[in-house]
Image 1: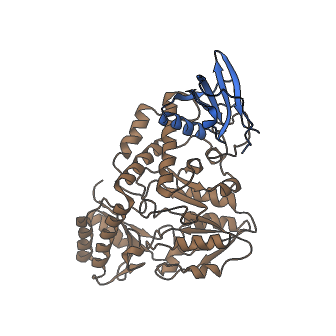
Image 2: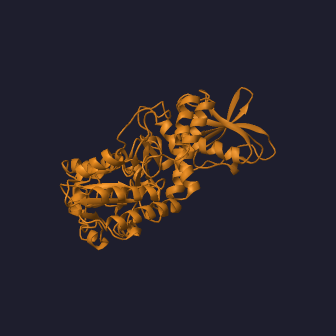
Image 3: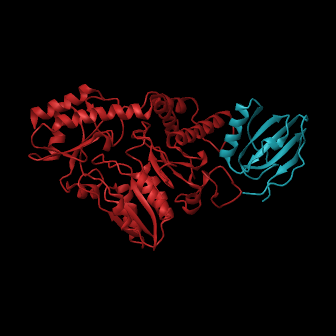
Length: 94
Length: 381
């Protein structure tokens, strides 16, 4: 699996919606279960075509803590949702 | 079902409570695919599929839910593993108690240059692990072994075999068709690399759903038998390498998975040990009584702890097929006679070609059921 690149994602206290992309749909389901169990607000979503050419699913969720707490090697990318824009805040090294 | 069903080793009946409702509920209320359309019902179905992988992990002590692969049955599972792993020049070892689900794929691979050795078990179907060592060669790649015979119910010493495989760096592939839902199976403790299971026997789920587990090393070595759409990595014409998509092309048997999900929850609530004890008590009562009837030969081990919930009988003064037919015709008792798709096992047990009549119990059977069979046998044979 990829080596993780040092990130420039927002730090604590910023309240953001994120979309997380995974290498596999199973990982997305697993992560959605984790979100639910941890009482974060979020859900599985079809990934916007802007973000991927795959027809897979991702997880959109609302998060206020440091993103590094949820990073795993199953995550390919994380985008912050800013209005209609998606800002790449994390990606694993290919 | 009218009559007394004693063919649970072929497929279990009745199924676990809740299985039929789960299958019908899915087909009636949802019925959608997963990993294709992305809407709430699809996500719910995806969650049930993932949860079923988790339930299987907890039952078999598999480390990773994503390495649980669904197939239509254990025969398909074994075909995928064996045909995807073995190449001409490879050597594999099996016991002489294997089912044709193992022997036929291996026979066809043997025609392509895969070498096969069979460790001979004794006439009760028992395997001596030291005999297995004698067959190990420099090109031995794997040991494939049933956990228990579908003919005699003999349990094979898989923990010892797994240890031996680890010492000699051999892949250890387990066929647990007859033991899943009956014995406590710990993938890690058995030092297994792959385990194939089916959903419709001891796991008490519907027909048409089975699967296998591969550790990470085998997951990358085994070539997929079936390739196609996975609803993932759709920009590529190549099959994804990651699990479970690597081995799950095409739409899964979702009604079957819903049914298996319900039956796994039942097994977990009921407890495998409780189920085993109940089945063993029934089969033990059957064996004790049947041994007092002249002209009936019990096949397999005498001790109840060395066997599964089945008993195979050979009628010395009658044609086994006629006895089986008469049991059904006169008493509604359903058994299976013949060779049970395991000619190698019957050769080992000395029951080839006449075969045996197999009585396979379920924990849903009662002591009265056993006594009914015994009385029928006493009266007629």
